[in-house]
Amino acid sequence: MFCNQCEQTTRGDVCHQWGACGKSPEVDALQDLLVHCLRGLSQVALQAKSLGIATRETDEFTCEMLFSTLTNVNFSVDDFINFVNRAIALRESLKLQIKATGNAVVESAMANFQPDSDTKQQIQQGKDLEFAFIGQSAKNIDIFSLKLTVLYGLKGLAAYAFHACELDQHDEGLYTFCHEVLANLDAQDKTLEEWLALALKVGEINLKAMELLDAGNTTTFGHPTPTVVPLGSTVGKAILVSGHDLLALKAVLEQTVGTGIKVYTHGELLPAHGYPKLKQTYPHLHGHYGTAWQNQTHEFDHFPGAIVMTTNCLMPPHQSYQDKVFTLGPVGYPGLQHTSIRDISSIIAKAESMPGFESECDRGTVTTGFARNAVLGVADAVVNAVKDGSIRHFFLVGGCDGAKPGRNYYSELVEKLPDDCVVLTLGCGKFRFFDKDLGNIGGIPRLLDVGQCNDAYSAIQIAVALAQAFDVTVNQLPLSLVLSWYEQKAIAVLLSLLYLGIQNIRIGPTLPAFLTPNVVKILSEKFQLKLITSAEQDLAACLS
Ligand code: FS2
Ligand code: SF4
Image (cartoon, rainbow, N blue to C red; front, side, top):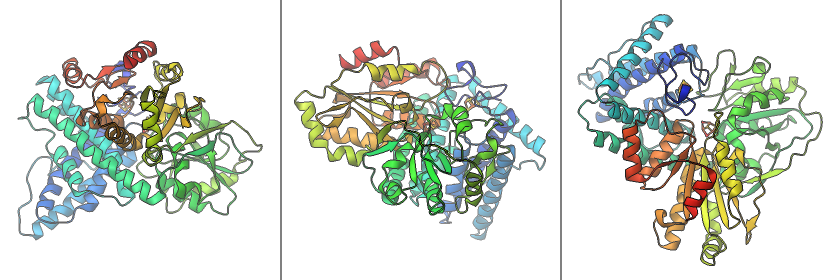
């Protein structure tokens, strides 16, 4: 196998025996086979679009399937065989529609590719395709590096677009772009500069995807407002919902009304409490349990109710608790029960069969809900605090958490910040410091939870609005971006920030393994992109 798409890749290089995430070589091969089939599907979809044939099902499917190949989403051989077959069925259906217009269908090896009917052979096909793809690295390793950047960024973009689709937010240009990238990923005639430009274009279109998701979330659930969230538990049966999917959380809440079951969020669903149409409509959304994804094996083991994994980041479950974990949407793991948000009766039955919390437990509270509307609602106070010197500097400390050492940097940085600095945070990286009481500056909290990694658009909007208020560029604001990355959504967000021309971003805990030294050099020269050093050193540099 060959996979280096995430931060925990083996030895900081590549997973080639078995995924450090738990992904098997078989699943890895089938993911590559799926991407290959999607690329053929995209070639046909582009032709169908040019003939005015409706392709919405293919568009949505493509995004969902790319999402299924993200780190920690799906580990099931059976699911990927099914996904491959669906890709071929959609492709053939589009071909029939093209033929019906009297046109000849686009001819290419990819558009005509046939997966074997035998699982072992399909896995071998995936391995062969992967081998051929990696072979391209021999021609020009830097171009191959940027090609991987484009592909991984596109996966992240597709994850956001998938969430937006679920909330009925679509953009034809975005879908066409995804198909064009997939259809032309083997282009041999592009220069290094053109691949870099394409990577930034992925960032540009990713902004669109995040904007759509923001529109979907805020029109469906209202604008987040600052909300105090209990971290403890109350007596009663319980369901824990993890991942990022607000719509799935809503389905759980809706279907548990009147059952007496209390619903808790986990991981990246903490910011769900800030959405008025979730918290106010469903008082049995009790609180938040646990921290970031990499702590789930311990946390899930102790949870006395059913657990629902709506999106990434799922870890291979321990036997001790796997019978109480359910998956939804693109998520899958062999042996875990998969269900649909339309009918969660199996999840409710599981929760009712379990003890639930038998005593009250007070673990304090945290506040979430400082998304763009809430922060910009007090923009005048923020601007005045900067002008009168009571706020010296903003730090955006955001992104993913992870299991590898080196991530204490982020908690150290936040702990060492001078009292006149404000932290904006988002993503699951916040769990390193989310329960710290940093106090406030003239009523403005020093720790502002903007939301999930999926809410990076909101943070960008805050920065842009502050820049407008001060009549400067974002790069001239007293703002430092210190990001932690783990998976492919973080790559897409980084490309968006670079597309916007944001300079001096610090990223860690390590640089992506798929970036060659030469590509890193280009990015650091062009954007002053930096690897984190130590909390003290970076703090001093940011405040100098
Ligand atoms: Fe955290 Fe995992 Fe949010 Fe990333 S829950 S690392 O894939 O999506 O951030
Ligand atoms: Fe390795 Fe990450 Fe790929 Fe998993 S997703 S196989 S840990 S690089």
